[in-house]
Amino acid sequence: MSISYVLKERKNTYGDYRDDIQSLVELNPNQMSFDEYVYIYELIKSKGGCNLLIFGLGRDSELWLNVNADGKTTFLEDNLDWIKIVNTQMNNLNKEIDIRHITYTNLGYDADRLLTEYESGQNNLKLDLPNDILDNNWDVIIVDAPAGYGEDVPCRMKSIYESYNLSNKKLDVDVIVHDAQRRIEKMYTDYFFKSYNHIKTLDDGKHGKLQHYRSVDSNE
Ligand SMILES: C[S@@+](CC[C@H](N)C(=O)[O-])C[C@H]1O[C@@H](n2cnc3c(N)ncnc32)[C@H](O)[C@@H]1O
Image (tube, rainbow, N blue to C red; front, top):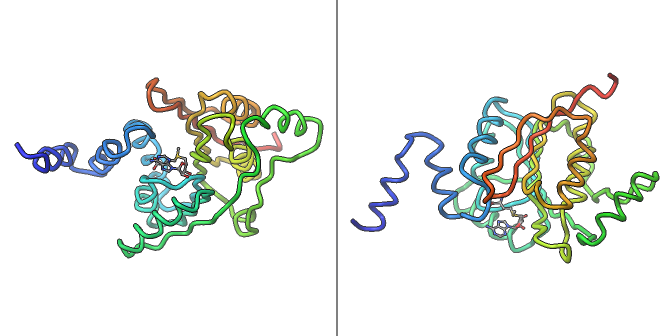
């Protein structure tokens, strides 16, 4: 049996979008799990076209564009190489994609200090985001960047903070944070989403923990 035959067989396991997810996970084994992708896909699909904001580009970007084809999807990315890769890929597919280049100016080592400062009223967690991103009413926000593989690189302090900042003015905004088992990501999600409804945790112990929160009425 040739390799291409094996792949073709695998792609027809479900006969629906899950075949795309299965191929993505095979191609991209160290990122989200099959179950995590299916969970987020179903959530976005259920909105029937929404305002979707994603921290982080990658091989999954096309999946998010496709599932939200009737809505507005915007990506925030710091890595210029990934912006080039995904822009080229989407150009080749004749698909439009809205990518904004952003800059993370802190390392993981800064995480404890930044949160202590925030608690004492000094907010140094804001990202320099365009006004239309700040003013938009987002329905779903996915935090899957920056890479944050160690404390000597930028971690997700500011993306988690901004996902909170952009969601807390409106009821029922879904916020998904991936790699939430990591020390900094756990500290920041526990802190910022403590008043939110905790909807779901997915964790197979191999692909990073996914946490799903939903904003509540801040007047209650
Ligand atoms: C956890 S990765 C996001 C991966 C993306 N969700 C995917 O799997 O398609 C976080 C950042 O690393 C970079 N990146 C994207 N895909 C990557 C990959 N397959 N391997 C390593 N880094 C990646 C991008 O700069 C991205 O913002």
